[in-house]
Amino acid sequence: MSQKDSQKTSIGGHAYEVFKLPPLDAQDVLIDIIQAVAPAAPEVAAIATAPGASGEELVSGQDLSIITKLASGLDKVKMRELIAIMAGVTHCDGAPFGNTYMEVFRGDLPSMYKWLWFCLQVQFGNFSALVQSALSRAARGNEHQGKSPST
Image 1 (cartoon, one colour):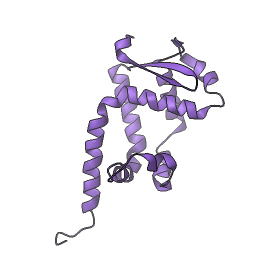
Image 2: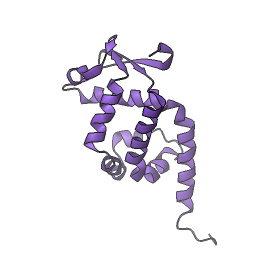
Image 3: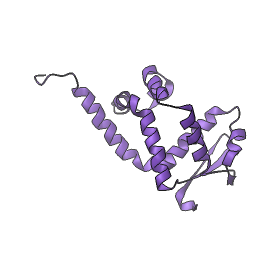
Image 4: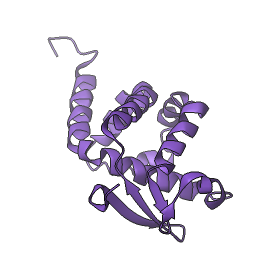
């Protein structure tokens, strides 16, 4: 793994370096993520594309229906698999993360989720413009649903 294919961050007092997945592994993870978040896509699109949207609405839990739909798409086995896959492409404090994540994150789930979110950004950050465009189109489609042609 070369450093040109990695990004670094600090979370919870640890320094992380996350490397890119091989393309077919990244594709598999992306498919799993899409399947998990698809049930909440229309609601997420409406919030993400609202004027002045910052994403705080999801983080603060103001829309429990979205959180419930996102959670319904999650599977414990897939989540553990995702964490293990991302640990496999992470160095923590200069050493391969491997299974040491179990000890590093013991009692610190917030740091684990921050690390996992960072890993996903490293892997799929280049999709941000594509995702934003798709969310905008989905939101526009939701605006037109239920309207008759005469309105």
